[in-house]
Length: 240
Image (cartoon, rainbow, N blue to C red; front, top):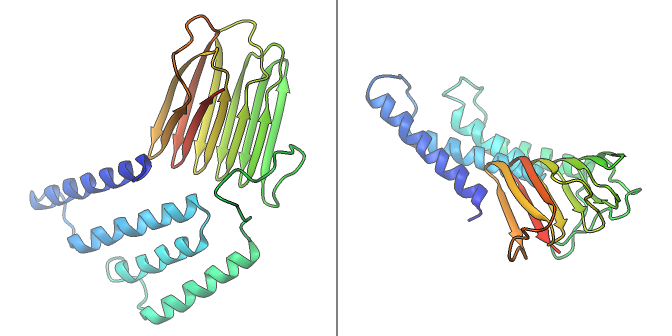
């Protein structure tokens, strides 16, 4: 189980326990059974996973299941389970036709190492001003190569997509340097020189932060502070 999944299920189960305790103490009043609460958590988990992976089947299945579970609780119209299944199938097929998912091979990075190539629904903003770099990516994949001879810092924002940032061509003249990452429902991978003294302070919510090939921390290299936030995704720092 990934860390993001552990965080989600851990918080969800704690929330259920607190809800049940407050209900038994009479501090809150609700006529919702434990089974309904558990099904609600399952629906939320499937919905979040569907959004993160851009899986229309997961999204509409979770919504259909939620309709069946909570129709009496919140007063939704009564629809048969077979009609819900038919509706979910048609919605999934329709959205998959309108918004086809780009195929991947072996779960490896496949899309848009050419900075001039973008996905059909992708939104990319890329700025580099006097060594200060700003890059944002949504609904697609992109790669950013930092070749500044006086790299002063950068901001990298990624949501519902994948971003790779290569710092091995960057030169730091006046440390410390600040790098800010904001990632949600996606992944940012940063390739950082081993000679840099990297310090991370990234806020995490239902997400992962990983480091590869770190080895011994360079105490003589330029100091680089990586801060920001990540939720429902992953930030991967690879030392090269």
